[in-house]
Amino acid sequence: MVEVIRAETAGFCMGVDLALNKLDSLIEKNESGKIYILGPIIHNPQVLEDYEKKGVITAKTPEDVPEGAYVVIRAHGIPKAVEEELRQRGVNVIDATCPKVKKAQLLIQRNTEDNRVLLLYGEDSHPEVKGLLSYGPAGPHLFDSRDELQAIDLDPDQKYCLAAQTTQDRSVYTDCISYLESKGIDFITLNTICDATRQRQDEAISLSGEVDHMIVVGGRISGNTRRLVQVVETAGTKCTHVETAEELPFEELKKLNKIGLTAGASTPKHLVDSIQQIVENI
Image 1 (cartoon, rainbow, N blue to C red):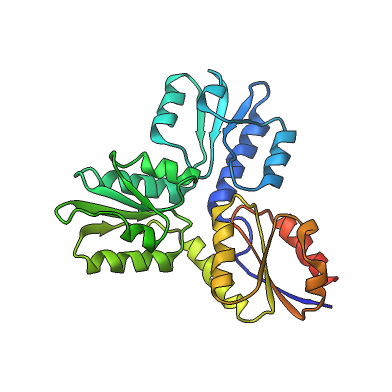
Image 2 (tube, helix red, strand yellow):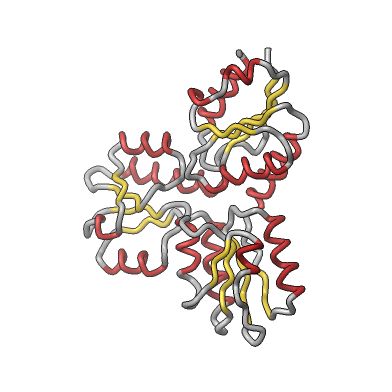
């Protein structure tokens, strides 16, 4: 039998739990009105499918949410102007933005009021990043690596504000801080990377050193899940990213003695449990 070592941090984080609890509570209380979510409330296709069966409608644009309806703001948050527009149209807004993301939004707003230019470490297409950018002044710089930061033509006479998407790699962020310091840039650093993200990554790296192979469970559109795969592979351990048990490389896993298991912050416990059971019985 294969030995499976499961990370203690695998599965839902606090922000995801809170968002889903708000949605569940609304579903329970709401007897007649339609409930919308603006984009996926969390990045897990299995969870979204379950809510679809309960009648929750995923709106692709704010205009898809009619006046008087309920809309639950996703855990990743939405752009400031979009939220204001929804409220002005008479939509009932339930804010399920992760508290860590909300804190990052407000920190960016507060620390760019003196015309500091925002330098944001994050993924261009990620919904959280779109929301974070909306809380700073126009003309921010977005980068996803130290190389991309180095490619930005920074003005030595300009003041900057450095922030990060909450699920980014802390070691890369630290590297970017060192680079800006070496250039003599006038900047302030915001501590916006979530501690739960750091703990999850640190545990994945530590666990990867004890096993022959790592399995990371989570949605492919989940940034924090992809980052777990990245940090494990960077540590030198073979890693497989799966959304469901059907994607497991059974033939390869049969040859191994010890396998590590972790999961992204939007991966439900029952999914991790089932994969652990299947792997242990290979």
